[in-house]
Length: 365
Image (cartoon, rainbow, N blue to C red; front, side):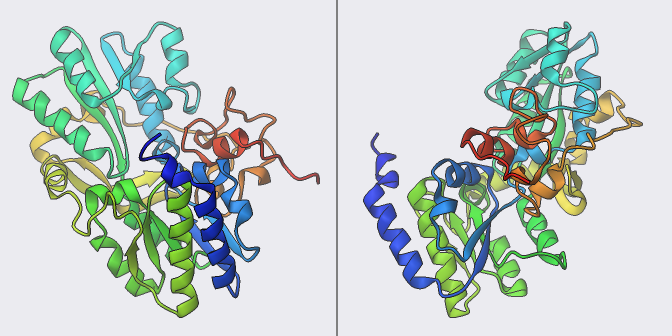
């Protein structure tokens, strides 16, 4: 397929691997922040082809996985109300809350719908004025512009029956939280190309300078990742720590300023809980006061919910890269894509799902 096959050329991949083997003189530990990058690394076996001393640490880059349990339980409480039509992207429907998931609620009669864009939810609200339509707005900076536009459109149309349950998170605060952990082993980052398409990379420059860690903005195809890893290792070997851009076909330093303005109009920065990680200050978005009447959590008063993670799920350790899915005793046994215990086994970007799809198994104990 044009514009895709050329980024999967095995001869070029072999050449990049040879360069990596020639460049690396010592062990290095790199973290890819994006779950899509994790899937490519694992599905293509790239992590197993790297020089023996180079280890990829899989970071908290799956937006479905880091959505906190509290938000999921809020979603269940709202979706179960008889007057509500609850809309979400499809991969959120099977993420387990404390007691159930949205797909199970739909099976029991709740009006839960999978949509392709937040604008689909706006259209539902316009077509069904007798229903309260709620859209589950999750994700990193990548999905924030479209969700912001949905709010602006609902505001223009005067839709009083549309709202968002917001759980947006931001990448740079998560990176600094990881680096502030005294047990952090990350020496370089591959930054998510789609996030930087929106935001650019200026906010990564202070992180690289403060923590002396190379950060390479990287795409998602095998050659993107191999070149991004090579660029990071070249920096590490030479003692440099800068932000570099591998994903030149899509990302510019300033990002998409129009998208940034839309985000800044509808949302404001707030503290946000990350599933398995905890509360991180200034790490998320919430609706600004001007658009707070579109906040589903306020509209339906979901305060006071009590959550409980499955004790056998080690999602937090997996999301921070402290453990691999194959370190989990439930992996592939009690926790499978068909019957997941936690979000990393559900999402198409989850590390556990990536390992399971690639046939990775637990080592005999």
